[in-house]
Image: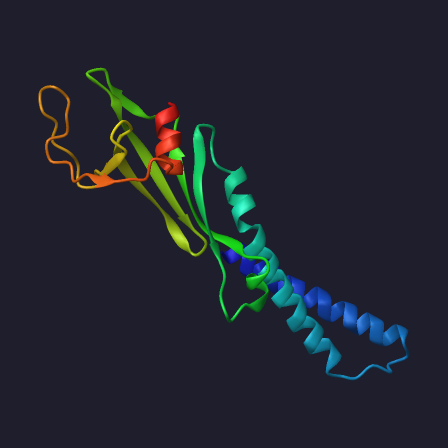
Amino acid sequence: MFLELIATVFAGIACAGLAMLLNIVTGRRLPRWLTPVAAGLGMIAMTISNEYTWFDRTAEQLPEGIAIAMTVDEQSWFRPWTQLWPFTERFVAVDTANTRRNQNLPEQRIADLYFFGRWSPVNQAPVLFDCAAARSAILIDGANFAEDGTVADADWQAMPNNDPILKLVGEE
């Protein structure tokens, strides 16, 4: 976030410098308000660019074995351009490389989900999936396992059969 702020300030300085250079080239015929307006427009353009490129930059930095399951696009009334071109503000990634299984329960798997947000820290949650029954249970507070390997205190939630997270975990 700090680097984005620095980049935004430098974009404003660069655009103001271009406006000043253009004013010198035209023999100082341009209005004086053009330089601060150019700086402001440069900063706004840099901010918009950062919002639209955040997802791609973050996704390419994910380590091997982390797969993106779903994204959430943002549209808002105070950013009218997002009505035409929404940008990805949040996404969920699954650690498919470290999915855990129990041989006694082959359709159940525990996978770590990572929740990324544009202006929020990354959150991680272990989730138990029952791929055959299309259900899941979040195990944030831990889990109590019975002798046969079943989770004794799971709070199961139904999932749609075509859920992208369930599909990713079920493929492993």
